[in-house]
Image 1 (cartoon, rainbow, N blue to C red):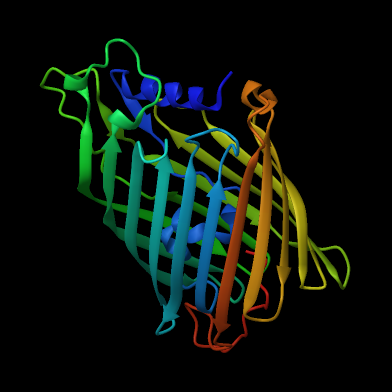
Image 2 (tube, helix red, strand yellow):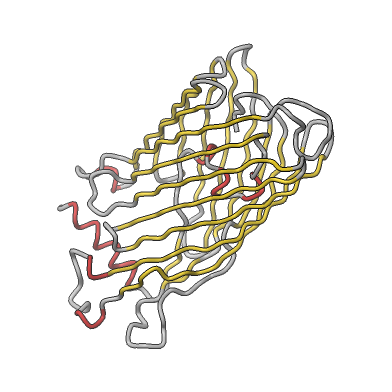
Length: 320
């Protein structure tokens, strides 16, 4: 089987009468929470900048690649602001989308230990599609049916809630609410209809101190979208001496992952992840798994935690 046969899958997706578009996938979502829940904005108690790169199914020509940049910080105690930019590409330019969103969150103190944040996001994305770049095309695709979309802008908005303390968190979110149709279904290309679908996220995790130097955090992320199976990510991570993070994750029925990270100082953290498919795709000779790398830079204020006036320094480094 040739690596370029991967592009046939794109052709199949584009030629169905309805496609449920899913958002970009992350293994290290626990360090990229702002991309899926706007209520997370400002929750870390200072300026936080995270860059993440994901290369999925390495060895498959045209496999997905994702780049993410998130910036957020608290403002005036209860308010958090953020900016998220995500670039997602499939098929060597056949399908390329760039999302950019502004985040706003407001936090209330539940008690001395826990806060509840509500978040909103607004922005949009640019869509580029060029089916002429497909290397394997069915006989029904002649030059007259080629579809090219150049930087089509679609607005969107989303919302979320995030409940957290120093040792527990739980959140729900719908990052994109509007269901935009990208192809005109009234013409001769009515078999080319792609619609953005709402993705629903539920996340939770808890931190337990196993000793003075070791913390343990099991976590779960559930993702649901119409037209696709429920996705469940289960992870278990250890934090040693507030410096070294290591663990594993399982994407239900899909892949196993290994995760590692190192906190160089109070400001800089580097993380890596590797996924290995357990489906038939994982057994192919040209699929070498998926890789992720992220870099985080933070400047913690040491001031009041959002939603309260009492000064309590945020734990450094936070495990979520």
